[in-house]
Image (cartoon, rainbow, N blue to C red; front, side):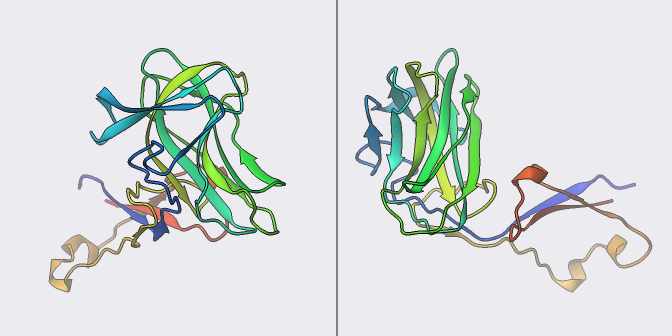
Amino acid sequence: WRSPWAIESEKAATQLLAANPQIITAAGGWTAVGTAAFDGAHATITGPDGAAAYQVSFGAVATDAVQDANATMAASTRYCNSVWARTITGTAQVRGEFRFHATSIHTDSDQTVTTTWTRLQHSAITAAGTVLGKYAGLRNGSGAAACTVLLWLPQFEGAGFASSPIRTAGATRAADLLSFAAVDVPAALLSGRYSVRLWPTAASTDVRQGDSFCVVGAW
């Protein structure tokens, strides 16, 4: 009997944000809409990886938002909009949103944020037509309650679900490729019987035609 092992393999993905995903302020290329405000990096709370987490305040206005107005997107294409979020105390409700043009605005349902880091994500397909007034970002909840949230590493990519973090605007993460010399192949894989199992890393409802991912385990 051998302990299970697993390999996660991702296809190539590009961070389509033009604003700096690691600096969520006006200086980083982000826009505050309505009474929303950038409060800067939090003094003591950091992101999941220990890097700076940025504080954003929404007023009692449902349309308050923080946006990147220069994110790359095209017509009739599926995108996933994601961000890690948490509160300092209590809970808050926010919604991910991106727009391609006036009849192609894609807003997530209200998502509850707590004091634990959670990655919020939603995906949709842009409509046909010409881009006009595009943006990707995060909006206040539909209940229009004033709130303060901490954000870390927003990501906008051409996929049905969020992939592992890409920290630089416009950067592409290469597809994962596992290879090793023939002499290093485990003997158990060269003779006898073995089994391979596949586990999806996202819900079945998140997978769309053209997506590719898998986790392989061997015993």
